[in-house]
Image (cartoon, rainbow, N blue to C red):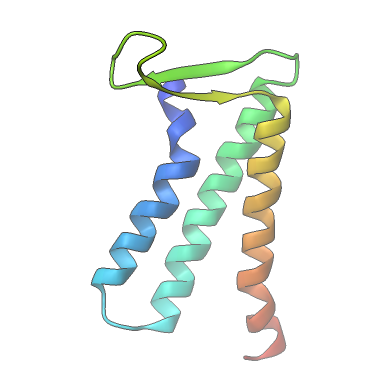
Length: 102
């Protein structure tokens, strides 16, 4: 496994939000980008849950700095589950207005 994927649940929504700020206001495009980003994060969260189900902890030091100085991303089973649940809640929150006809 490439531990560089651990930063994606943080970086992907930030990049999507930055991209949407630069685009003109289009609710349909915004909703689609947010839904696609959240679906990707949900998939990654599910994969992280599967990778950490045996109790292992995945970690990645950002920037190739020595340990203790670098920003460290880590995922254990609980944090992977929180990423998955949060992404699922965002997806539901994006789809409910569409189901209600708003």
